[in-house]
Length: 131
Image 1 (spheres, rainbow, N blue to C red):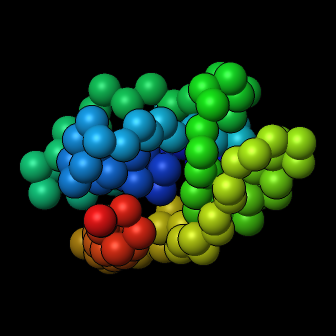
Image 2: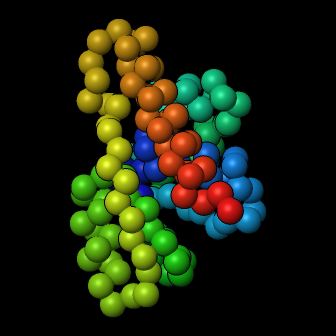
Image 3: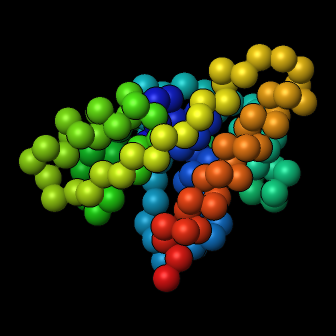
């Protein structure tokens, strides 16, 4: 879960599916939806993962999904998850994750920021969910 379900959380969802297939149920959402960021699509394509069909969702669209764990990637998402889970038996983990949309500069500089987020998420996901 992140702020917009346009960069970090779609990356995390796709990476989790890539590494763990059907052994884990995963769905991403944002506090507010926004169109998928084209840099996200580009950096995921670099590693052979197609996210071009991702449809951004809000947290409200997933409220009844019955998750055991919510991983939040932004402060705004973490606060929202804590509000949602006050009366639920759901674990919430906060993984502070840099927002690559904040990087200005050349296309290469921006792509490097997105790659860094992608690679950091990949490592965290493998560490957290590997048996």
